[in-house]
Image 1 (tube, rainbow over the protein chains, first blue to last red):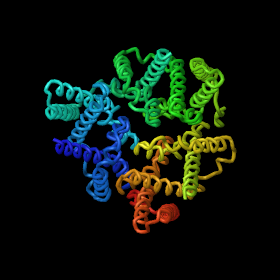
Image 2: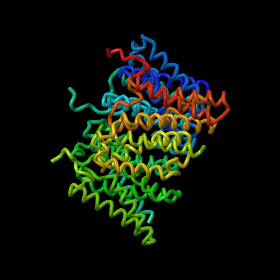
Image 3: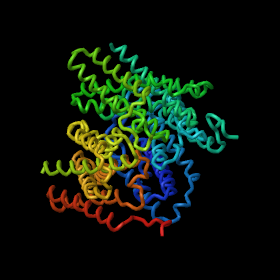
Length: 205
Length: 205
Length: 205
């Protein structure tokens, strides 16, 4: 169980790191910028979660293989000529897995520390979305979570509640995590595929 | 006493949340963006204060009615057609109350934790102004506290010292809080009304 | 020993504060903005370090002479007419000293708290560079550490490892600190002087 969670978390971190580096490279940043944006995108959400819940040491300080892994990816990304061929569309699936696993693990940590369901769902959303928001702010883009053409944070929020409901109904941690994660991944993929939105942009035809 | 403080704090939070949502709506954000900006504006200052002073759990985690209230306001704001008629000028008074109560309660918490008067006044200013600064940064505006046409942070700073002086002179917590709060609210309203500045802009006629 | 470190730290803080105020003044900010940017540039790195390592109270809360000093510099800077004659080129040396001392002291604190060398070097880089990054973000510039024409973070990272190597080889704290600091200062000055970069900008002739 722990191994599967760790593998899923690693998948999410790699996906978020790569999504950050793609944006950083598109902005023509140097290797340090590429590493920094990758690091911040992949580990920003978890760092905010740990700071807000006073959960020390931060998880990437305990698992130093995570920043080392991001450093290796950044070196490949900076000096490998064909890295620019990786399009953002290629990482929609791993990014969705990252969003799912981060949201649910963030919410679960909050529950473990005795917070209420509502607070836990907020912390789940923050853990899942903060890294990507930082990436967009640092790269001077309108953050993903605010764009009308994306329902990103809402899926994370709904997914946390699906997870809570399954925990309560099924009394099985593994099933609840699987259902919550699948919910987030599938709805996120469907939202990207079918262009689902919370509110139509009034200025768009 | 506690009830009055709680009511004032709630007023400030609602005012700050609405001020954030007005800006978010003007930027044409979706409901998630409107909630996020409202949340960050209303609770950002207190979160920074609690993190910097290692005061856990964060106050909005202890009082989950606060984020729930902000969520309700965001729903109304997003789907109620006439919300766009609320002009920023309508919230100058509640915003000033929020600035006052956040500044003074932030400074008082720092004193309670044994910090010096100067450090307490800095933390008061941060508590009072950080939410609005985050709102402006996230919405890509030049932050309020840096604009030459506003004396925002200075009033908060002066108000903290008025509060400290009253505490020392009057030996009554309630009177000191009332005087400090009134000072900030009145000076802030006067500054907006009469366009008072710290320094004239040399490029302006 | 402690006195020399404190003096070096003070030099770095003053240099960083002035570098922030120069940018703030160039952006035509008012005195509050000048103080805020100076404060954030000088103390931002150490605050991030202390928050991430749960090292409370924050160092500027323990040493209130530091924010008071920054306040005094901000007053001089705001009302002294000839302050605008201080060019950023004049503070390259003190800025390099600040980068060096902050990086090495940040890394050393992480080692003292039991973190690994790699994590310590990351925290050293964050301590040394975060203040300047915040300054650039708040003033709406592309952060220094991301610009292709600067190798800023890389020097800090390399300097931390030079410091670790000296600690291991020489078994003398003072010598290691001196060598690490000199390495960062000299390489930084050389990089500015001879325009050394990590990667040539492909779009530049």
